[in-house]
Image 1 (tube, rainbow, N blue to C red):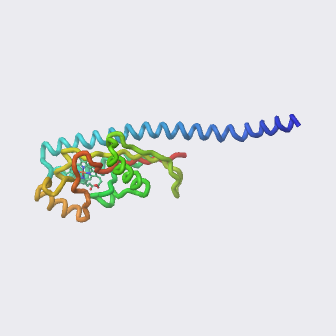
Image 2: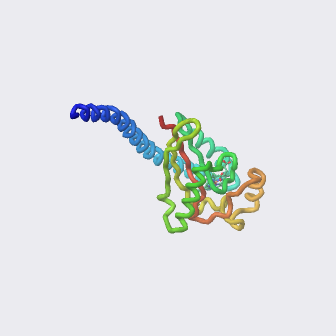
Image 3: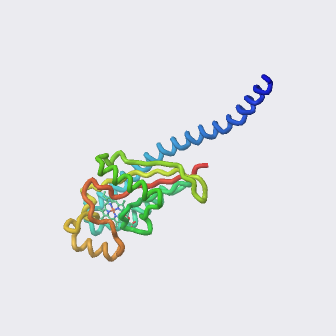
Length: 197
Ligand code: HEC
């Protein structure tokens, strides 16, 4: 009898140890990816913000459009390597093709807006998950981007956007939804996904 219990216990140990080990290593990977994604999102925002600020100061908003149109997606592509994908998404995208959130990103962004209404500061807003998709498991991370004063000439209320800028935006982005923001409001998010094995 004792022998059977012992054998059963041994079988259980043998069966559970590898499963536990996988779980622990998955958790370690997820924690590592979270840390790295936080850093990447921060670095991306800082880098793009720096280039944007320099352009706004040197050539003015209307001529800074290429920064947003060309450099931002190019910078996102630069960070989308080795199985990582970085995007900027928004519930009110200017560039529908690049900036439309998927189901999870949309849910997260809607949650961020609600949290902000409830008084949560935007700066600390982030979300992460591991999702099963048709092509495997992905680690997902989203970090909120607040609207800052220098964003308003391109994303603000109609009276804050020059006539020239309005014409330019209408020509370049006929489906633009990304105006009417005020400082502090969530403009969108940086979204990073990475394959988990
Ligand atoms: C000079 C005008 C200009 C300024 C200033 C500007 N943006 Fe944009 N923004 C754009 C344009 C143009 C696009 C569309 C880029 C593209 O085609 O991918 C865009 C796209 C975005 C997107 C991607 C999602 C979308 O709507 O397509 C985010 C997020 C964003 N801007 C945030 C900001 C924030 C935050 C600031 C201020 C720190 C800012 N922008 C300042 C013009 C501007």
